[in-house]
Image (cartoon, rainbow, N blue to C red; front, side, top):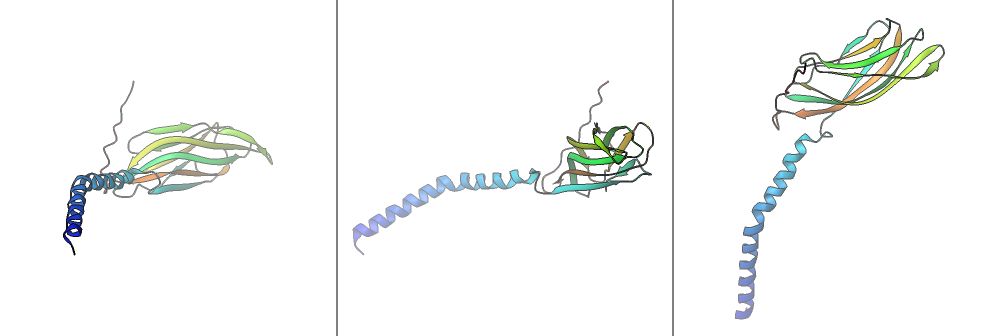
Length: 173
């Protein structure tokens, strides 16, 4: 190996070392930032609850939120048939422990075989922490036999990976 080749190899090694010293830490920080930011992505732990409406019940409780998780409900969709033709006032979702509530008016979609059919597709945001339950209440003008199905969807956050700040509730009078 001649002196010129040895000199070029040494210069190249010094240059790579210098570049590595300036780029390694910021690059690693960018990679770590991407990994950390993905923890709260809504698609990481999707949630879906199915509520089957029976004629004898107006209130339905979803299963309690699992330990170490936070549930964020983002949508409720579904339909209900009322017999005899009745009026559906609202479909409400409430956190039983914090009393936070979202009320949604259903829309009359039509009448089928003597039954009024109401539909609902409501975006929302309702939050429940570990151990808390969400209750769905179907309200009408009078108690009437009904049948229907609703899907409550959203996502879970893992409070063990990234801590979940306490939910702050403000009462406005």
